[in-house]
Length: 336
Image (cartoon, rainbow, N blue to C red; front, top):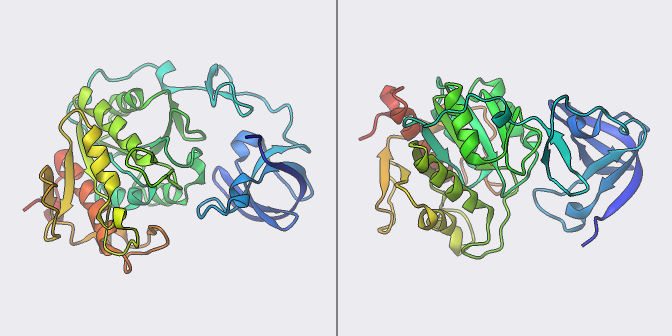
């Protein structure tokens, strides 16, 4: 299918953030990634991709600036970069990758690796890991630009996340890795005490058992197991989702577990009833999740912590298990 593009003029700059600009092009909401397409100003002539808005996607109801014809042409490339992101597409760009720096660890030496199937689990996980050096690895399966995430920005501002790595097809992170295995090895080699892997916002989904972005977590789990890490799966749990396949423990969680080749622990909040099939779980006290997550962006399918508390408690539990395994124990995060 061809790219659906339109030409227009920037008529408003509504918000300028690190790595992201929200704007309007002739009255229509749009976002731009200035590190990719250059600076943007009022009156600039631009070309935008309108596909997501045309499809009325819930997490992508805006246009995306593709090229700035006024000031975005002939931008300098990244010095020394030669490995492509989005290779052989009209959007390919050369980016330095962590593999080229050297210093990748041969083993994770038990480093906890939390596996999220949704981006909205990231904030509770990192809140539970407070006090640890945490690296976030964004996987394919959702939005590709790391800079789209308001959650990543908020976690960095709170000191709950040190760096964000764009893995595989993902772009615009603090660093880039060819794959999740090398991304994890880089994090271990840099002394991070935990890694959290998740797709970006707006997960791909088809309603089928094997056609969704959550399965990126299985690849990360297998990489962590092969590298002698400690993979921990954040269960996707909901009591409010109207879809049967996502009520209770989501079929996404089960699908990931079925594709894991090594031992993967599912973190579980103490006191929350678990389905009989979920035997490989580690229970942990997650009762302080609300206090720890206060002020962080908490939203899952438009529902906040009051509408779907078990979703956030389960994600927080995964961070708590990782904290325990990293050796940074706190009284509230000791297991039963």
